[in-house]
Every structure is written in C-alpha cells, then in structure tokens.
Length: 488
Image (cartoon, rainbow, N blue to C red):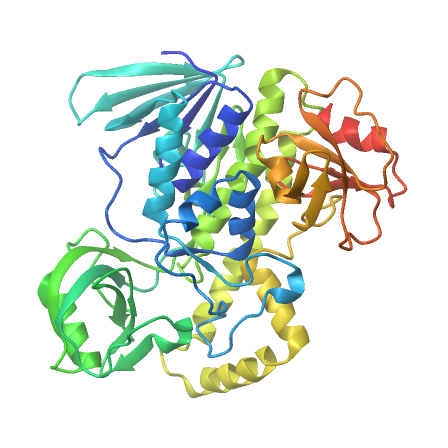
C-alpha cells in the first residue's frame, strides 16, 4: 500500500492530524494497534483554546449539540477551590467544555470514513525504515505471522506514551519516571453515602482523602462515575497489574464510608506521574505528536489539548511541504513552536503535583493557602487561566490567536472562526480595502468583511490555518513578506 502520510495511532491526535491532511487533499492512512476504540473514559473535557481550535474546523458544534448539559464551572489549578476565569481572554468558551474523548474520536473517525481515509485497526507496527524519499512501515495483525507493508513520504507517530515508532527509531525519551501508582476507574454505585458528590460543580468539590487513600470521584453521564484513587504514600501495583473490584471497594469504603457500595466496575486502568519529552519532534521524515512526544501527570485535561493542537500546527505545514509550496523552514517550525509549549505544560503539571499536597506536608499546605489567595486576585487569575486554557499562547514571531469576532461579509452575518473551516489561511480585510494574495489562492482566501468589535486597531489580518495571526496592517512587515514566510 502507498500513501503520502502514514499516521500511527488512532487517538485524538492521530485522527485530528489525518482530518487536517484531508482538508488539503493529502492521501493519508491511519494505522492502529487496537481493534476498537477503548470504552474507558479518559479526558472528559476540552480546555477553551482546544474548543476554539475545533470550532475553527466546524467540528465542535455538532458534538456539543449532543451533550445533555453545558458546563458553567470554571477551570482549576491544582484542584484549588478558585475558579479560573477565562472571560478576560475574549473567548466564546470561558469554561472547560464537557466532551468525552471517546466521543471526539468517534466523530473524527466517522468523518474520515466518509472521506475514504483508511483507519487500519488491529495492525501492530513491527518495523520502520526511512530513506531520502520516504518511510516504509511493516505491520502484522493480531500478532500472527501475516502482515503487510505501507510506504509513505512522511510518517507521524501519534501512538502514545509507549510509542512503538519512538522505540523502533531508538529515539530517547528523557525525563523522570513515575513515582506514584494511581487507578482510573469507570463504575456505577449500588449505594451512596452523603459523602458522594452529585450534580455538576467545580472540580475542587471532588477530591477527598481518608486513611491512606486520596480519591477524586465525580459524576458522569447517567449513573456512571469516574473514580481516580491512589495511596498517599504513592505505593501501588505495577502498571500492567489488572485493577480488581476489591481494590476499588477498599478505596470507596475508606473515603466514602461503608454506605457506599460498588455496583459495576466497567473499566479500569493504572497511571502514574511520569514526565518525559522527546528532544526533537522531527527525525528525518518522521514526526512526533501528542503523547508520543510528551507525557505528564494527567491533570487539567492537558494531554488531549496538547495533542489536538500539535496536530493542527503540523497538519497544514506538512501539507504545504507535500504540495511543494512550503517555504524553507516551515516544517521545522513545528518543533520550534510546539516543543516549548509542551515543556511549559510539563513544568506546570509538576508544580500542580506539588501544590496538590498528596503527602499532607504542612509546608506545602501553607503554599496551597498562599496560592489559593493569589488566585483570587484578578491579575493572577487571568495569568494562570491563560496558561491552563492555552488562550495566552503565542509562538515566536507570530501574533496572538484570532479572536472569534462577529462579522458581516458579502454573504451575510458570520463569525471569524467560520472562515477557517477549509483549513486554509485567510486574509481578512475589515477596512474595505481589497488586497492581493498573489498566486496563493489555493492556500489563502481573501475575505472582505465588517465588524463592530475591536480587533486591536487592525484593519486587515493574515490568519494562519491554525488560527494565529501571521500579520496585521499595524505591523512594520509588508504583507507580501508575511505571505511568503508562511505560504511560500
């Protein structure tokens, strides 16, 4: 089998990347070891910036239409009892958006199927070789001797923290190993004590501790709960040891009392707090994205958010290289832009791990109190909410994210985000002056519009496909220079 891009891994990162490539007409094949999508809940929501990114592609609205209720509670930092307020960042999504990772994956895979993109499940990558012209992958099905081969011009590893691609290429994954053993379980309760939380609320309502256990129990759809637990010492079985129902019962009884009884244990797995990141996001014709590039303690929904935004940053650049219009350095800018972003998130999650005070250290408790008070200050809250949500992100030499203002175009009312559904760049003229994108009309659309909202005094904006401003008419750089830099 031959294609342009091989994506290894059918999680949210790999599926989103495949979708981005299809927008540019790039043939892609997705290879996934698992036969079917996992049923266990993982990320239960999206940070505001990732919600905006999905909105740029028109993907969010149909997903939210199926949600039973919206979340009106702000985000959190280290599970402290102060809501993070994202309203100062001028976003349509000032709260984390409730959306199960499994639903996003199902939606993306369904769209890829409609577009004829093969998602080859049950294929385990066993060998990989790259040369000056492309990458060859060998795979086998179900661990049997039979298998096959795929040849592509590039490969993107989106195959998780235990990436097979990373191992086959002998790419180092420096950082710190896990120091704790935790369990994530989807379950129902046959009986509940008054200590069991009900209904929606700020995340700080859910953590509890008693005896030797630390737990987070929060309601999900229907009668299902998600329980995270571990011992305050950090001790626990190895990652591969199955989670037993008795183990879950012990944690429930210890923290929520004997009046809380396990009903059905639907799914469970173990995780830790390892922190690692590859040194380079590109190895020849192979790129790393999502958990294959970086892992950290799962707190604040940062994993899925990093992965989706990795995909949207890389997709249009890889398409440009394959179409032959990418300027020098465009592909390398993927590493230059995304590596520091993940490094900051890894640092942020490590800080939260300390502040959460799992060991009940009195000195750390004092720090918790101080940080809680600081978060109540508007300026501090804005700063931290910008980091946690991703709304403050700016790449070197690039402007801030596009604010999704209301517009009026020749076709009627719309929003700025809806101009980005095609995955192309947009030159948006708000001052009535027509401008030229030269011979780049296949990758940059020129739109004339009006708005009553403030766009930082700009009368025209050049927007990259990932939603960041490449130029405004308030810059000293000429428009042609910016067009050439990002669109060839």
